[in-house]
Image (cartoon, rainbow, N blue to C red; front, side, top):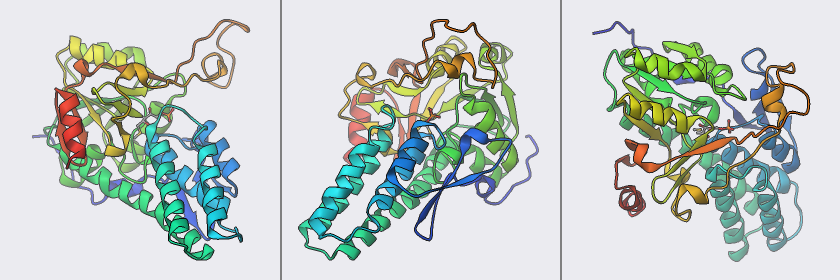
Length: 359
Ligand code: MRU
């Protein structure tokens, strides 16, 4: 048995990415981590749109939460009648939905905000009450996310044993959510319970979410984390140091295909080649039964500079052709299980995922 001293509420040592205080949205600028901790004050929905597009806030649940507060920013001083207010909220929500295309949590959170605004209008609520209800809805989305992630962590931890090596890709931790993260949640709960896990964090080219964010937040919380570059993962697996892989996701299609940060598919192939289970952790809000398969998930393409100048200096010839998809799709047959707040789903996914929603 490995030695691990229990650490109460380890996840609370992680910086919160999104905070609502005194009518303003304060957002951790994740592009500056790990060197600088800067909270930006955002005042308009357009500020939030820009922050999402520029990856100041990133990670599927966190962008949904930020966008929900973005709608509140757009209407909090509104003085027209409640129907006009609802139309204004819907307009802001629809604009915020164009900030990034892949993570379905963004659209899920904005749909909740639109439904809340429309319900207030239908009920003939007073405008100040309808604004209050929108703020309450955004706060509720954030609070539910924390609760959900803790449950995901509890289920995910049942898949791990003391002393195991676990590899993760990208950042699906507290920095990508309200607290705990999805794929990183079991690591925090393991710390609370004195269970020793040895985490390998892929650096995650080109934006380095693994190095800048996962290695940072796990180290801050006291989790045993080792950073590797993406091309070291197969080597580390071949050494026998990894007994499981766990990643987050931006969208799970109805057939169980999983979109996540570019490179995830490669990790799943490597895991299969080494007979290592490949787990995906996500809330129900990331499962999109209206998207039939992974081929139907829109994959964001980002600016070539992320590839050619990602380290702050040019590392490729000027003008070279670049292909820079931000996500890839892991086919369901490579996924050992999907861990949600309602339990662990295994193949056949079409049926298992549908049953999750049926309660
Ligand atoms: O481009 P990003 O940093 O927003 O991509 C984030 C990811 O791919 C995460 O793994 C995913 O959103 C899950 S977050 C709980």
